[in-house]
Amino acid sequence: MIRMLLRVLGHEYAPPVRRTVALMATTAIVEGLSYALLVPVLRALFGSTPKDAWPWLTAFGAAVAVYAVLRYASDLSGFRAGTTLLHGMYHRLGDHLARLPIGWYGAGRVGEVSVLASRGVLQAMSVIAHLLAPFISACVTPLTIVAVILAVNWRMGLAALVAVPVVAAIQIWTGRSMAATDAERAERDHEATGRVIEYLQAQPVLRAGGRTAERFRLLDDSLHELQRASRRSTLSALPGALGLTLTVQTMFTALLVLGAYLALGGSIGAAEVLAILVLAARCADPLLSLSDIGGKLRGARSELARLDTVLRTEPLPEPREPVQPVGHDLEFESVAFQHDGRTVIDDLSLSVPEGQRLAVVGPSGAGKSTLLQLLARFYDVDAGAVRVGGADVRAISTEVLMAQIAIVFQDVYLFDGTIEENVRLGRPDADEAELRAAASAARLDEVIERLPGGWSAHVGEGGALLSGGERQRVSIARALLKNAPIVLLDEVTSALDPVNETAVHEGVERLMAGRTVVMVAHRLRTVRRADRVVFLDGGRIVEEGGHDELLRRGGRYADLWEISADLDVVHP
Image (cartoon, rainbow, N blue to C red; front, side):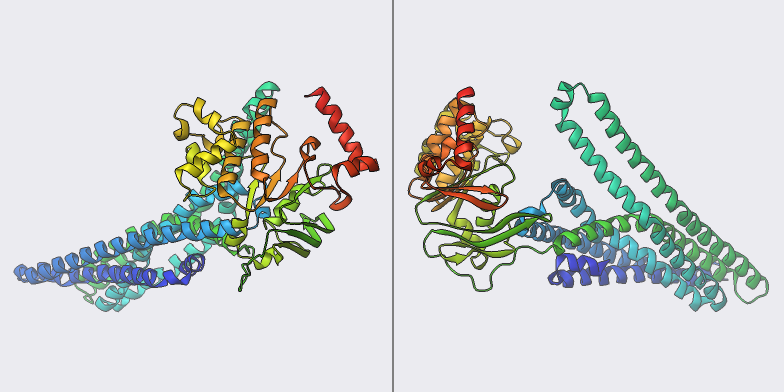
């Protein structure tokens, strides 16, 4: 468990963890040894001069005081180490997630990671702060007490020692038998969480289709599966808990019978028997708690295993000796790329001179958006090379590459903060004049003026409090503020109303001025001002040239332009 924890966190955290474990083990040993003083105390109390017990009682009190101080220190060390580990875990997980390929974030992955990053991390890191001390105490203190009993009377010590392998065997057997049911319960828990989120998010569609009852049955079935899995997990824990209880009771009974037999035979005094029984009774509580602690540790270990799986996922490699791009031209050289076993880009070559605009058109699934993602190095190509300023993007550090590129997506995500905070993500150190200029160029100032709170207006989670056009204006203002020399546009006006489309077009024109631009276009009237157009289909370039040239050819682009023109007449 500790080895996995250090593997997940990194071995730089090993020293405080080892110190904490050593302190907790010392505390547990001192606790067990302090009870050894009960033997001379009871001997004196049952002897001819009970007053002789006072020195031993004082020593026992001092030992308990030492134990109390050590317990406080070990608990405090555990909390501090747990806080340090929690802080380190969040930083390591966050840094790692930021370097994973965008393709890793598939369906269901975001929900899984959100649960793992909240409840999962807390549960895993609670091992040091809350579970390690009672677990060490439940293991080490009874063993120390058994050693004390051996020192008092070897026969009764051996009788107590017999219980040690039995308890260990029960714990191992319980852990193995519960592994499958614990995994099933965790899986059902994730499924039920997903169903609840799906049910809540799909309310408008379900109500419009009159299918809320059906969807409720699906959710209900998922919750019933979770209930059944939880019941199976609880039932699988019962044999271990009962076995542990019976072992402890049997050990105590055996010691009682053996002690009585030895006392009647004169081999041991009544005071020693009573002291050993008190020590045995003190073993019972920590041993019985092993069942509950073991279950929590298994849960924490499962979360650690999930964290380990995520952290073992290979991120996109950073260059050892990064190069600096020279200029802002773009080039695809014999690029091939597959995703989920499907060829998305197939032996594609094209170039965009610095300061020119390239429009990419084609049917859905042709690989248009993938070109932008390869330029921004959201993925690495399987063959060929993508170059920015003459340098392979794989040889450019992520920080430098991202400083060269501003991206405006069709689906804009805004963080749950103010409009100003979302715009400043483009360049946090921008001054007030630059911020206002970017907003004006994107025509975001019109939105700010009519919103209560102006720049301080909250946009809601994902920008839910703004319309699609308003979110797009924030995104364009953010890109303008970044002032990057390369702009990637993934059809930013396809789902906007005419008023917002006009405003966004004006902002996009200002954003593209003087920059190298690659734009993915679904509505072809946005490509008229492109210097060059490529028609993509099946990951290959089918046609390329200027807008007017492609229309004269009468090929695929001309057909698509005619369809687009007809749609614009129907939906102006």
